[in-house]
Length: 416
Image (cartoon, rainbow, N blue to C red; front, side, top):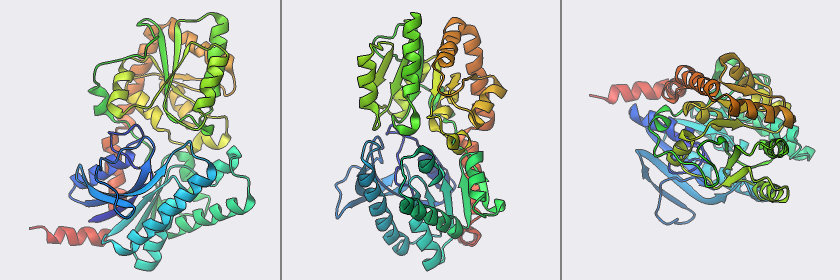
């Protein structure tokens, strides 16, 4: 079976961003399928291609995956207009491939929502099976965050969402809330599968030399947030907790923010202005280097802005990296992850917008390292039993294969 796979923000493990699409594509390749990934040039991402762009794109095979990379640079730090322009340019060029490439099934994953456009064309013009994966609910999330207020833009996004769901033969949601959100658009639940983000157990089990950033002592409690520094992440909550810890004189607790994003400079400026020397900022690192950091970390920080749409409507990579590394997790908003942490006793779930409760949890973690270690062990068991990437990839592959049974039958009959 030949799969044409659209993911604008694709990266291999050489990059510093999520690798879900890489792992899913590798699983397809391992089962004998042919996969072509179509992507852009994403800040923090690494496709593995090194040749020069020719007429705005380059193509090559990396780890058995045929990769088409458009020369369309994108960063979370870009303004809304620039990002929207890049989204639509990527969609337009992707439509050209959807109409011209040879393939049996087309797969597209958000974000952005415009990722569904080539799938719509593939379905209705070429009659191809289309599987659509939803990582965030749009326009629900930007509307709830207040980052998009123009009613015409929100209406257009709602129409595109409906058209993508209507066109897809099958859909995938990454969290229970996302599955519910798709179903609320009158999509039959038998067309929707829940396949959350997974844990890369092998990467974290075989971590390289553990390391800590300068300024963090071996006996300090090190709590790490690894992810985007954007509006959705609400990282002022970490600085609020750091200020409270400073007031309490807890210089033995260090908070590390590793990543990039639109708000990073402002966060750094605030930390300097308030003398928050207990906060360390660090540039993004690749997955292997992150595994080394996690091996020397005591606690993972799962932080988001207090937006109710996030409670059940997100499936953050960082949470699954933390538990894969055997780290307990401090989560600062309600929802399915907070409930999971409480049920499995693998960390702390604190109320949103409560710097005192956030700091209290950090102090409890620092003052009882034995209990903290047990929390991390329970998190690792959760990773192994429910979120093993390989097992989830098998579920994902079965769902995608089921969208194109005729192609599978032809492949089987062609084998000797």
